[in-house]
Image 1: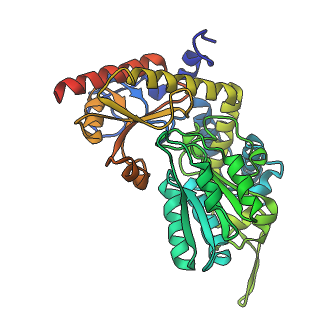
Image 2 (image 1 turned 90 degrees about the vertical axis):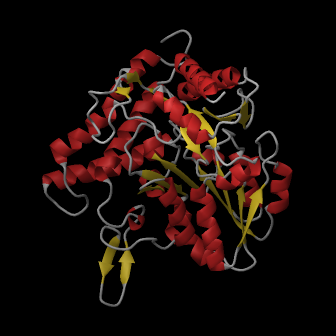
Image 3 (image 1 turned 90 degrees about the horizontal axis):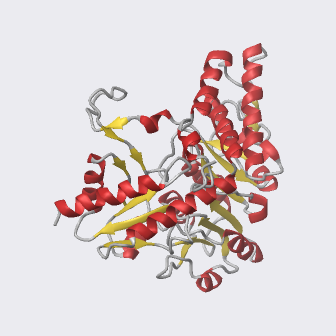
Length: 424
């Protein structure tokens, strides 16, 4: 292990061939890189992480060795695929501390679908006039828009916990908002814009004190730090595979078993049916009653392999590495008076930094950085109301993962220097 990092970055980078490629050529023919000439510096991990060879190999093994539909055939391939897919649920459950195993983990497409599943399967039945849903001003659109629209359908009220000037939640305001009318407290664990790590366990306790449920958006936390859903005491917890070395097209919804058992399905069709007549139907056991149709089998296999990969590194090490890079980036960017950063200090945030360069729109800055091979995110990061509160239309976001280095942060700063000169 390299002395200067909590993880062996060189060994990890060797698992990700894409990090060795160059960029800058013709994008009309994806996969052909003959004209590319600029080394890639990938700092857009909060949007999606890359996938190591070990995970790709697991997916290839599925397609080459036992590709078949699950729970529908008694032939050998179907049985192998079924076992692998079921074991993947158990593996993901173990990773987040869900002692109920597969019965408490529903595979979805992503965090957004997990949010919608609960909002429609629980919210439409349980919310009504006089009820409230409490969120925060830093929520991702996946949560904010979903509960906003469900509230419009049911007549419930949506309330937002204030974000203070340091980018943290005003917990006194939270105490005022979470009251006897509250049925759901839905909060982001780590802000994808501010980097704020929210006190989700305390918020869950506040929800439970008034008889409400707590839903945690873990899209930015499960990939980056140890998470124990039972220690948090979340009633629901959602996250995505593609942000944690896994494939796209799969996410997970954790729910306490007794709550999931009471909820009605969100989607109907094959796989989730136990029996059907022309008059009525009954549902399969958990979690299958929430997984209608042919599920993401290959993605599930890849999801489990990604969990194995991260466990081998150690989530404490993943967190330490991210925090080291975030603090280093915060300090480097803080050297310049013309850069404004958003959120808590560098030693008290998740592994990302959102910022703006004076007099340069975030999209223009992103374009200049792209020409130098630095991949970052520019826009409102699906937190438009938060950006409105910050008084900016957009921001530039650099986000880090286990394979990034201080040298790549330095290249980001150098690229910003070039942009500064161009727009001077």
